[in-house]
Amino acid sequence: MDGKKIERAVKLLLEGMGEDAEREGLKDTPARVARAFVEVFAGYADSAEKHLSVTFESSESGIVLEKDIPVYSVCEHHLLPFFGKAHVAYLPDGKVTGLSKIARTVEVYARRLQLQERLTGQIAAAIEDNLSPRGVMVVIEAEHTCMTMRGIKKTGSKTVTCACLGEFERDENLRARVMEMIKW
Image 1 (cartoon, rainbow, N blue to C red):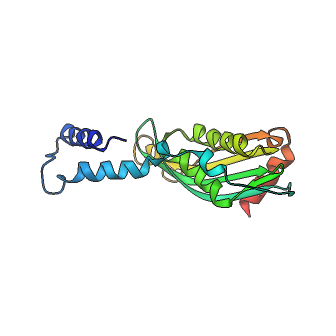
Image 2 (cartoon, rainbow, N blue to C red):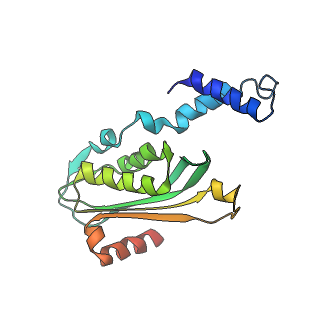
Image 3 (cartoon, one colour):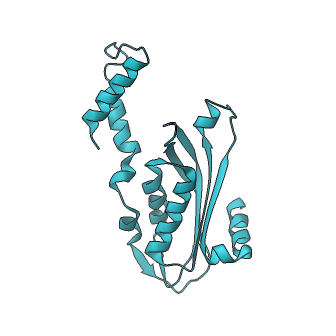
């Protein structure tokens, strides 16, 4: 990520808004925004494969659900944040990964410019590709500030997306079981 280029762009943005980019409160803003962008968009420099390569043999085959994983991302259409929770379930087929690796996988993809629909699918595909489970289900519920602070201004409205692969795609009862577990 090119911090100097981001600084120049932020300065132009401030000037385009009619601000004096050199005034006391704003003169360090371009550098602060550049540092924030490096952190917020760290997913471009990370990979789910790196995290999901840590696996353990397991004979367990029941649902593994990591729920209520905080999600913070940025909508690629308006460059405004969306935030909420991700719930990731999978059916192991001989191997499992550390629980923190699931949350790290969510983070890898959330820390990029995103669409919630794509984010949901990317997480599911990464789990499937790297763990080869019998099934994967990812549910994300998020509030989009592009809908709450501008445009329609419907504070508190949430978007829910779901991706189902393998047995979760084929078995309605499994999907229902995960949805019930999310509510617990």
